[in-house]
Structures are given as structure tokens and as C-alpha cells.
Image 1 (tube, chains in turn brown, orange):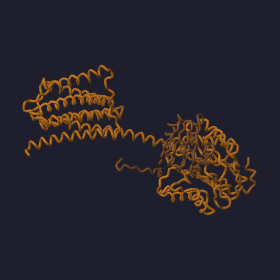
Image 2: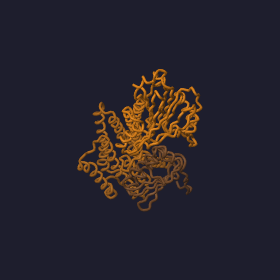
Image 3: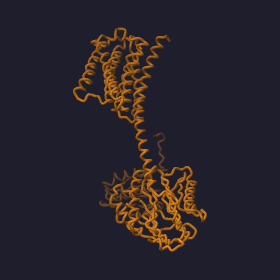
Image 4: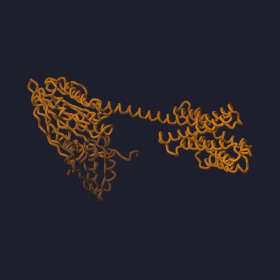
Length: 114
Length: 498
């Protein structure tokens, strides 16, 4: 409701995920902020599905992602496989916590991490 | 204020209340029950709302000689809407029994032509005075055609619907419980409006100018909307209950897949093993497993499927069977995981994956060979203290068909033990979003007495996790497996290799 004309933009609490999409031609960047877990991953999967058809390069920016669960990894895995034959998927700047999960599950070998 | 004024005031108030009541039912139907505007009940409610507005119009303009035109408009609109409402009522009741005429011509003949004729007659009535007339003093009178044509037709519409409902109720009284229930409701609904209106006539007299048709309609509509929504609710509840029953059986099937009898190998004093699983949902994606490959080799498995619920449970079942089969077929843990991964990847359209830690213990020597497909680091107790053991990590199973895995060799001495777990342990979260973490897990393990059994150790970790998270809801399954090696049998161990 626009009662005060202001919105609380702090999405980094609880099970929240903020997804912002920017693109330059066929190069799309998805900025994920918050937690990518069982609760938030369906919306992320949908957003990726919307852009993946058109994208030739997909950059997933994780610099503000605090937590990733196996459900979240599944979404990234799906995106990697969809991009496999038509372009490049880059996982950018994962935080320490997310990087550890990538290493633990072996996904750091699968993704192109910058 | 004279009594007459009070009565007129109350009467108008009653009409307004009836319209508001129907308005609320209409809004409920759209907002609460998520019905569309095209929904039959919504249309009926909307029609009766406008009907009520016309009723208020003529009732408040009557007996004002200068408002004769408005009285006519109110009365004509009232009659037209009444015809439409009766048609809708008839169609709704027949619709509930699937008795609406199928042919286009029948629909036009029964439902389009009569209202059209009536509408034309109603609109022309200020000049023809066939249905109603308003005299010089502004008083509204019903004319001949009203009694001869209008009233019987309305009664006919309602009667056909109610009789059809009664017939259906009698026919299906033994067979179909649900339709019988609907039939009774439709009879009550179809009878309520005329019954309530007749009650008004009895109380006030047929010539009374205080008959409020819309009040009768609103009473019937309250009955109908409550009934329909309760019916929908009951149906949904039945479906949910069926799904819940399915889930319960699913949980049973899933848990019965895991070895649950402890002590698991009472005749094998060489090792002590215990495992536990607490799914966060009815069905989970975690599992543990252990089984003898032959007399000298014990396989240990702990795994965590991505995601939760039924998809994870289905994936867990197939993974567990693959791992079990391929471990029994032979090979090192890395070779087994490679074969299982190829199989899983071949049919993995849902992009599911599972992290697996697989260990094979050679009981006679204490040599434990393990391989990890992206699973949490095991916690090893080699010299009386548990430490995180960073073994070689391969990719989670199901992610990529060509993934390679590496074997890790661990030599267990008498009294050494190993603890493996899923992320539900390390990622248990308290109310402040703090993770339990591997450090607290190690702390809990090391705080146990040296002679604690594996069962006691697992219970101890569980208690530590519970004490940490307190009341915060947990989203992850909690699965653990612990093994202590008690050294080879006193007698020659080579006897058991066969």
C-alpha cells in the first residue's frame, strides 16, 4: 500500500530472494540477492526460464547471495544445461558461503566461475 | 413522526439492507471464493442487486405525483430484472443436475423469447397500462395482464426447476450421495424464495405495498452461497485428506526401505553401527543405508537429494536402489559412483541430483575405502577426537554424466570411529538465522564419553542440535550415521573372507 510512499527494500532477511535482470542485447545478467533455497528457488527457476530462450550469454551474479541450498543448486544446474548448446553461462562472484557449497558438492568444476 | 412515516421508513431500510446483504454475498463470491464474474451465482447475485435497486426506486417514488415517471421506470426495471432472475434461478438449478436443454432452439424458445416479450411489454407498459399503472396520485396498481401472464410464468419457471430437482432426488436417493445432497439443497433453494414471499403475503396481505421481494431473494441467496462454498470446502478437504493418507503411506514405504533394526548386526562384534533419519516433511530426500557385501565387507551410504517432498522422495528411491545394486556388483566406491551417476544422468529430465558418501569397510583389516559425490565431509575419530576429514570430492550424482570420482583410503584401528551426516545437521538454524555448523557438530561429538555407543553418540548430536535451534522451524531432513571399529575378531579373520 502506498500509504507512506516508501518501501522497505531490505530483502536479505528470512527466506527472501530479490532477482534483478539486466541485458545488453543477448547478454543477460541476473543479480540474486538474499537466499536461494527451497522456498525461493521456484521463482528463480521461472525467471531464468523466461530469459534463457533468448540469451546467448547468461551471467548469474551471486555477490549478494547469502545462502544456497541444494534446491538452489538444482536451479543453477538446470540453467547450465539449458545454456550448454547455445551459449555460455557464467557464475560471477560467489560469496564465501556459497563458494564453499560449490566446492563441497563439486559444482565448482561444472560452472564457469569468475 | 406518524406511524405511517415510521413504517414507510422501516420498509425502505429493509429494502436497502437486503441489497447490501446481496452486495456482500457478491463481493464474497468474487474475492473470497475466487469466482469469476461469469460464474452463475455471481450473475444471479448481481441481477438481484439491480433488482433490489429498482425495487427501492419505485417503492420510494410511489405516491409522489410528480415522480410518476420514476415510479414507472422503477416498476418496469423491477419486473424485467425479476423475469431475468427467475430464468437464472431455473437455469442454475437445472445446471446442477445437468438438465439444461442441450439444443440451441430449446434454449432460445424457453429462455430468450419469453423474457424478450416480457421486456417489450414492460417497457411499453407506461403507455399501454397492461402490466401496471400509476394513477394521478402516483399510486402503483397491478393490472390484469400482471396476474394473468406475469405471475403464472414466474411460478412456472421456479416450479419446473424445483420439480426437476425433486425428481432427481428421488431417482438418485439410493445411488449417488453427493448429487442427492445437491438435489436437496436445490429444492430448499428453489422453494425458499416463493415460501418467504408467501409468508410476507400472509403476514401483510396480498395488496400490501410493503412486500419486499428482494428480502426473500437475499435469504435464499445466503442459503445458496453458504451451501455451495461449504460443499466446495468439503470436497477440497476430502482431496487433501486423500493426499495426506498417500503421503503417510509414502513415508512408510520410504522408511521401510532403510535398515531400521538396531543393533543391526548383533553377531558381528567387530563394529558398532547406528543411523537415524528425521525427515522435515512427510517424505524427505535424505537416506542412509548399510549392508554386508560379503562376509568381510560392510557398505555404508549416506545421501541427500536436492529439493524436498515427493520429487525428492522418488529420486531418493531410485538412487538408493542403484547404489545398493551396484555396490553389491563389486568395484571400489569411486567406480560404483561413476556407474550409478551414468545411470542417473541418462534419465534425469528434472535436473535433480543427489550428494552421496559411500564407504566400504574391510572388516578383517579396518581399511575403509570411501568416495564422495559432493557430500559433506565426514568426521573421523582416529585418536580419540573427532576431526573434519577433507576427502576428495567429486560432483554430485545426476549433475553430469561424465563425472569422475576418487577413492580415499582410511585405516581404522580398534576404537576409531566415523560420523557421516547430511546438511540438516550442519545447517540446522536457530531463530537468529545462525547455523549449527560443523564446529558445533564436532564439539557435540567430542563431548560424548569415550565409551559411548554409536546410538548414544547420535542421540547426543540430535540433542545438541535440538538445544541449539530451540523452537525455530527446520526445513531440512536430519540424517546421521555412525560407525565404530572394534578391531578384527580374535580368531583368525581370514576365515570370514569367504
